[in-house]
Length: 434
Ligand code: AMO
Figure (tube, rainbow, N blue to C red):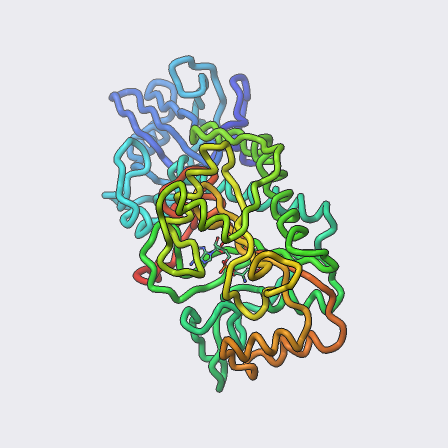
């Protein structure tokens, strides 16, 4: 007989097989009520002394919380039981005993702090409200894939171990690669671009990126998942922003339809977005901060966390959760910069979502001589990038792309406080296990 999820079990079913964890036990002598929990829900299993053989009843009575059991039985209506039905067991197999005491309470309302939860993550993930975050995350990925697949993007998988980093030396994680030093990637950026030289035209990749920053914030981790996109034959950075904006608008509608259960359980309401995301220049962002909040970011080339938060407040009051800031000064060698026709210093943008940076991207520089000059100015060691630079010598189309933090997207959409809540087994400077 095939196992069913508890949600698919109906009163009147003469014989069903369900399996899962013992969520609750109520023992009132001749009657033992067990609530069995599986991925999709819960069901009551009622052990009645008068109706069962002695062994089966005793086994039911001896169950402990979080034991894994498999039950075969008939289903009856019972208005007092959760979901209005209960199983009368005919057979029970104990598949896995749980030790006592449990390292973390799964049923009941005992709240543990995040660090304890992450230490005992396999137990924490048994909680429905925690599991729902990851069922939601699964739908975020499926929704994004659906959009970009339909738009003709090709999903790619580029190396995690590489010779150089796209985002600069200080945040590279070194690995020993046979006899050489190599690094975990900070971003698939360079490979996405090489595939533009290869004629792939439009690509996306979902995968891990690593940053060895000593961050202890609620929005940074050492290993995160990026949603990366690159596209060729663009006019300018606006085409890249369109690709990102349209994907997110589609995603929100997709989630409203396909993740309604998770959203409702978490009390989150998502609103479809019809209007364009505001696009302001870096200088406009600085002026806005000065005029409205009398705030000047310390680093003249960045908006910093506080600046992003204040701008987020400004735009959210006007009904915009998302807005772009375009034209950051002093950008990296791979962004197009200092074009005469632009009234800004680069074609690099950030997308801010509810006051937090969600994505960076822009039009790339595809002219090799300009890249080399920028590398000289930045003091970049070209020998680490020879494989990348070669791709610009033999026909590189104009192109651009972006990287979006998937963990930030999930946690911000759900209104979670800490990015680590949206990551199964997060990594930070003080956490390498589990
Ligand atoms: P950037 O470094 O801005 O750009 O990263 C893109 C997005 O990835 C997420 N992110 C992080 N999330 C959690 N913890 C971190 N430590 C972390 N660092 C980054 C953020 C961020 O907006 N190569 C460019 C992208 C491109 O131009 O294609 C890049 O990686 O949400």
